[in-house]
Amino acid sequence: MIRFEHVTKRYPDGTVAVDDLSLEVPRGGITVLVGPSGCGKTTTLRMVNRMVEPTEGRITIDDDDITARPAAELRRSIGYVIQHAGLFPHRTVLANVTTVPRLLGWDRPRARTAAMEAIEKVGLTADQARRYPAQLSGGQQQRVGVARALASGPDLVLMDEPFSAVDPLVRADLQQEVRRLQRDLGITVVLVTHDIDEALTLGDSVAVMRQGGHLAQFATPADLLAEPADDFVASFVGKDRGYRALGFADVRVTPRAERSVQVGEQVRAGSGWVLVTDGSGMPLGWVDGTGWGGPVREDRLHRLGAVAGPDDSARALLDAALSSPSGRGVVMADGRVVGTVTPEDVLDALARRPDADRVGQGGDAS
Image 1 (cartoon, rainbow, N blue to C red):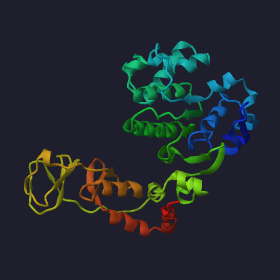
Image 2 (cartoon, one colour; image 1 turned 60 degrees about the horizontal axis):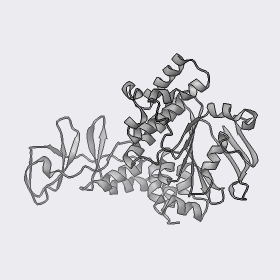
Image 3 (cartoon, helix red, strand yellow; image 1 turned 90 degrees about the horizontal axis):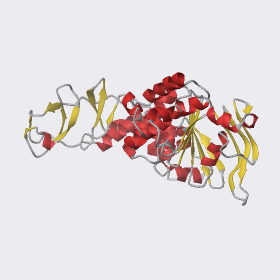
Image 4 (tube, rainbow, N blue to C red; image 1 turned 45 degrees about the horizontal axis):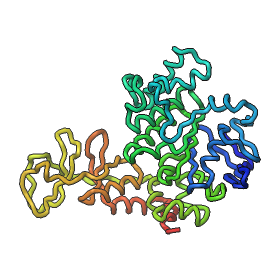
């Protein structure tokens, strides 16, 4: 959908932000530009909507040269999400989200209808639509920024470090929301981040850029982890890329049957770690019956650890096992516990896969 043809951005002082970039961004997915500070990723993004004009080369969207349209018209046709949301503080959430539709000449009723639909899509309510940005949390404000980008129904949305200003838990929720919206709407998203974990989590394709504005590698997350192009990419992806690669490895692990008790029930001394559930089968935590016996009390529960689904990736299953105090990861389906898995279960399943050698290639440090 977006094609960069030998694109260079050189500033008057001689600084080269992007150097001879040739890249094709596919339609209908999330492409992430990632790299260290000063590598030209934000400049690359902003050249797409002509907030920055390239010095050399050509950029096309659906084979149309972006310079063939007035810059303001081009920008209004492309959704744009920035850090800190960039909202107008003196306008309500609804008024903020209607901004682009109104600039496009939509009448007020149509713009308000589209804005409310976008607000609901990002998980906000009609009551929140009447509030001002300062009355919302940071994560909610960022959702408003996403809603504003979606309100006019663009096919292309650009996101410049959209989650860098929110805490990790909110960030994870927003990442999932963007992934869901992209799939539901079928739009094309180009996102800039400096966080390789975010790039691997969100990207269908990942462009790793190096200092000087050079493209180091463009690949799927799985290929990036398994076959980094050079030492720079391997180092940037990280020494634990073998573990990260498990996030793209599907395995078949049959969960072990797991005995459970409820709060108030007896645990026999010497029984080891026992899973505690509520009346509906939802896990509450673990109790250690190694050197203790008696009725289970809530104040004796240990954290549950991560929970996985039976069809999750090897990384999710292994993480569930490693984060559990018992060494047994809880596996759930349809709102109930179906069993547990151990690290050995996951590793044995990986060893039996036809592409086991390729999955292990990421294990080198760099």
